[in-house]
Amino acid sequence: MYKIKNHSKLDIYFKNADYSDIKTIEGEVSLRHFISAMLSYYPWWIVFLYKIREFLVSILGLVKHEKPDVLPSLKPEDISLDSGEQASFFIVKAAKENFYWVSETSEDKHLKAYFGVVAEEVSDSLTRFHVFTSVKYIHWTGPVYFNLIRPFHHIVVARMMKNGVKR
Image (cartoon, rainbow, N blue to C red):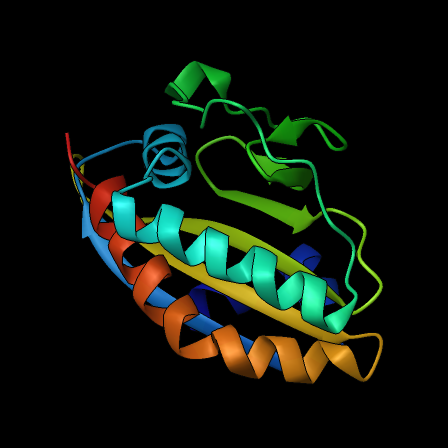
């Protein structure tokens, strides 16, 4: 949390949050490489979890987002730093090259979620990545939905991070 608190511009993503977490990992890759590899991680079991999510969405009457025909495989140069640009399933909110990148989920009626990465240079070749998730419930279905997926959220994000530091 310390490194994220050093960027006061990121405070707004935690203000009035109903839930937030921060996970940390180190690797010898750039911020853009880390993000692109994270957002391109789609093993069979994550695809299966998305199918379960579709079922939950229909039961809770949540917004059904259009899913792509092909899951994106992003390269570092594909990661936009421009607010409002699309990045896989997320929309870029704020970014600063080699320092941080923050995105949000598409518009939903049940919750608003932010997903971000703060890069901390440890040495010339090693970077510590602080990955955060911040969630604000909008409707009673928000905590119901999020608490059902929360155990999987931790596993998915941890595995995405491991993929992010692969060279």
